[in-house]
Length: 560
Image (cartoon, rainbow, N blue to C red; front, side, top):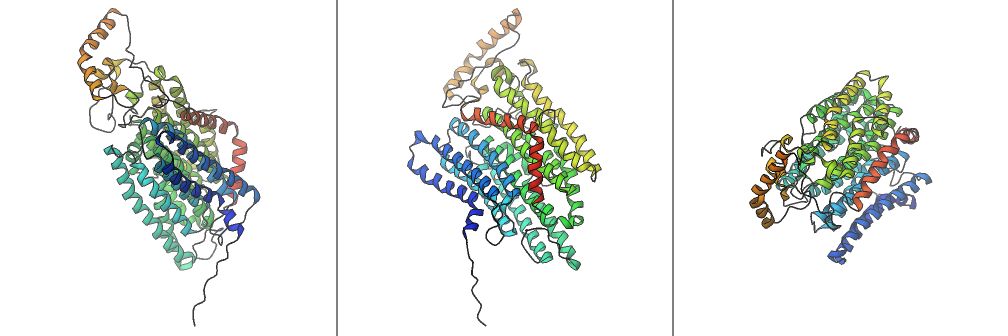
């Protein structure tokens, strides 16, 4: 018998369900076209256009959620409360990324700004597919789309070897992780007979339970890589350090929110009734992630690496809510994701402000005494560090309280481990906060050793005393200016020594940094806005813990 053609009837509801995705896709195409038209002096409008696309997608997400649009394209894409909550969370992170990038790429003179913003929005499209996809094939499509953009963005500053290394590492390891995810989907299809994720899969697996366990384990590997869970975290510190600071911000908040959205929809949604098959796996991953992330962060003095291991630890805290597998614990994890987006984005925004084009400027030695040079940046970073520690009344405290309270009744061991590791994290967070307000005593600054991850990029005593342009937080000075500073260094050293001997000066101030609108200084224009929004979120999400948890609970209940 001849095979019958399959008819697909696409209705207005289908397009309405994916309208937020269409806004982002249209923004990508528009950016590429406008980039060809705009003259170089007006490239700043590309950032505004990208930000407008993100705002439009957020508005569309709210309208679709309020209207109660049905699932589209045969149930493959949903517009439920869970998709709305996670999409708004990651879109907030993307908006902060664009604001930070606007100042950063002008300061380091990136010419291909149109491609930069287009890649960010293309990756955002993949993230939103992960959050809204109710079908394994849509999830796989989203995973691949977000990864393709990040491969290029991680190595966008091609003149830096460490950036090219970061891109290659992320490409190789992410490709393996995506393959694990796809193999896991194949096993789950063999076990359940479907690739749909709409509601719990309650069919009796019988002798196919082995397929179910293997499939869920492989899917956990693929998504565990994206959230930087141990032991799939090895790429995180190297890629976070090598990638441009705004890209690191984007990876830290956007990718994590999207990958956790997929984890919630798969484990706490479709396979929530089969928790006995996956809880032991994720329990062990959560424990290892919390312990390894915090202990490895203790020895870091490069702040991007420190925050990389910190993000590993926070992934462990969120996994506690996944393992507990109740609507309340999932709601607490969703609230934690929103808080994490605000405080982590703010911390990386400050690093984007101080990072130079050669990748230096983010070690503990180089950040020492930042409050004396740029008090706004130091105060903002201190606020975010306190929130990451979990100090009340900041939002970080309430997010940890919510997640551990929800887990305490059924996962007491995980709760105790999480609380203990949260106490350990106070050491490395507060160590940075203290350094920001420490006096600039040159004798206390360690010399750069030129090797090792802890002392890489440190400021030497000669640089500090002479005030050479190598300490500048902007674009490095021309070679002729650096040669002049070296020739004049003995005279400067002699003068400083006489001042110290006579008691006229107790410390040496570094060279002042120009802050022209084009170079950006430490904090300029859109960067002020990003820091203000992140700080407001870190404060307000703590005061709005009740409404946020209610919204997160409504989102979590749609998974079952």
